[in-house]
Length: 251
Length: 251
DNA sequence: CGTAGCCTTGACCGCCCTCAAATTATGTGG
DNA sequence: CCACATAATTTGAGGGCGGTCAAGGCTACG
Image (cartoon, rainbow over all chains, first blue to last red; front, side):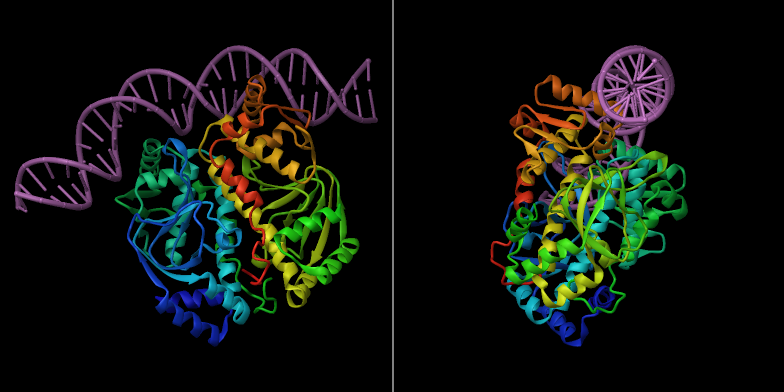
């Protein structure tokens, strides 16, 4: 598991054997476990470190009055969170698990030390974070305009592609660990209307979502329904990789 | 003008006199001008550098079929753009001016050189970029759920606060250089309904938007209408500052 | 004075929300 | 394994918010 993620990280930034060993060693010390449906970070608390997800599924969200709980991102194995909050000195949103999560904790001290001694590691983490930043922008573009079916298709598309990328999908089927209420929060629809929209996607033979399980019957149609942006999103998912073999540190 | 921005940058990251002079010198060489309503970056092109806005107003946006043009961020003096695209090797959205813009161009070579010799400068630029990242997340939280009046209030609130912060507002009045169509794209409403919503805000004595000019009559009510998130947004705007006086480079 | 862009207003309609209830999973203790 | 409680999904009916189409007014500029 760790090996797979290390290879993925290496695509973002070649970190070399020394840093690789340091990181691998830290994965043993800093490993933490979280129950399903448990909070990891809460808003307005003060961060003391960052996490690297090894297994499980989590999400970024906030709590609004009236019970609204908009979700602003999905965290899968290989993703990093808590990094940005270290700079801004405060969490501006919550992070909670959906499925049970294993994550490696990097304390602020550890990160500061690496920043001096193994800056390529910090660079790699930032590049991983950067990819999420791209996804967030697509989230703005897709959750704002567009009708219900387009937004839902967009989310299912992202789930399918990303879960596949980290090996959490088998053929056209993936376990999302999400309820329809979770999905509703992600696309800013009511659970009732989300359910109707899912029914439409199912009736048209595009995708089915039942019991936390997503089955994509027609990926081409799903991509098309999700609308423009999917191609570029595809690029975003693959991007941030360090094709220049890392001559620049922070760039 | 440059002095003011240099001071602001210094709050994000103390960069010292050497870097300060280097940056100031570069502001003369790399200065570029853009007409109002002109493109600066276009999607799917390949980036060769980043910009630091000295004067004017621009925005990030994309082009969707059906003429939709969702806006994902506003760029004001002091803001940085094009930085993230350098890492991902491709622009995933457009940047266009609203008002005429003066911006300093940093070529990829320059940034790479600084990355080696004056890393605190790169760090400062990233911290500035980071603040925008916070705003983007609030954009997701606010453009998604919530009704028209809340979304519009949210945008007017951000405009008012940010324009004030960079001295582009006089008392309760600011020139936004935006049409109602621009605003409509920012909140994902049709121009028609945006107009009605603005009328409501005007009738209730909260704010008026006419002829590119925003006048806030009741800031407290505007903040309240914009809803929760404004307080934390306030924090985001002020955050990312380097209160620890910069012992860590990238952190 | 005329044209073009922007703003404003009206009428109509459909998407999505709200409220409510029925039905089906999931889990827990007996 | 069953009875029960709780959570999640499904379906229905009705209404409001915001979209769409269209026409008219305002402003700027040549």
